[in-house]
Length: 304
Length: 233
Image (cartoon, rainbow over all chains, first blue to last red):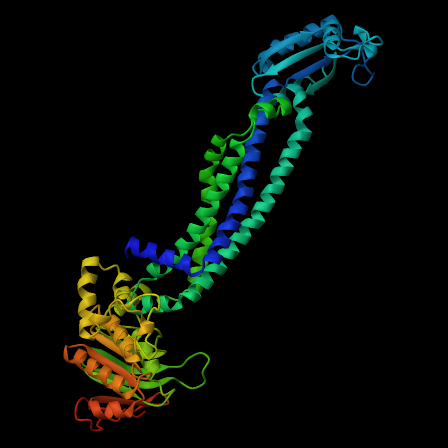
């Protein structure tokens, strides 16, 4: 079995059915474009989380005189309660999770509100006493926020403990749903590509039945008879995946990053480097599916 | 060289057996005709020798191998010792004469140097070296069958199986093909040929095995063409 002969036979198979070959390439192209979109959406989501979770904090709002009975039965946080909370935050059980702690008094909260609120009319009805003093906790690892929140919730003088990451749940949910949708379409398309590959190989085997019969009669091994058909399937998958990678590359290469990142603040936008980084996985997926489809079809339809 | 002992074969879809109680012994260098009407079992016998089919019962020994016992990979290796010719030539229309003959060697991974020597030799043997670059469609039936014979012989097989090789040819071309097969046989290749053509069988005066309904009804041993061993079941 000579590689050059096998390559010629593979090419002869492609030439015998160019339309069918092209259809596998195109279906693979579309399906792998959805797979690539799924992978890049997940990378974008990771970038988004990295960007915002690093900036998000756990905020411990302290009781004020207006806090409700339920969370603050003793009324506003006393100095002793604030001091007790400070000691807790400094204890190793919590401090190990924190990179910084900042206390904001009611006056400081009011000053910050004045800086950020443009509608000054509203401010004339607000006094510092209506606001909550708070501790702003920056975590070393935002994933540990639940531990910190749990240990501070319900402590005397604490009105509410808020993990700011919760603000991003809607957009994370949108990105996750988009990933799910893209992944679902990719799965259906990949199934279509696999079925098309098996049908094409069956047709190709029928078209080339005379060559196959001669090969069998002169004593060619089963492997050398089947290999060109398997390679035909793999070649189509390779070309289709190449096109999908090229499409993703070209799309991301043309994006105006400056405009997008300042407008959307979604963290670092995925780049062509990310496309390159997912390319081996894309090839692995498409070639594996093509290999299984080709081998199954070849073994079923080509008698050796 | 070829030995069949009590071979029985029935196809799944058929009610009658294709071959029953077939026992044959063929020596190296023999030229044997398989004759009989359509459905008599000639092609089934060739398919057993090609190991396209397995016997349901009995043993088929060829070149020292028990064909019932060999694996798929061994079947491929075994077939390299056989040459096969069919009534419909089975040439590849998009390849020229040289390409058709070379195909049999390319498939087996033979070196280019070997192919460049063996193919012209085979074409010379069948008298078609001048037609090396012609496409099969431009050749007569007899010439196409000679290309098929060249392809069957190019790997120097020990046995040539021919299934109605003159079935599609006129008498002149048939004679030409038979002369060629006779020369091949004289060079040492065992030839087993299935045919309907009684005229050819009479003229060649070689061993004849006659089949009818899957049974051997006559086996004229070697030259002499006298009915001797009745293989009747």
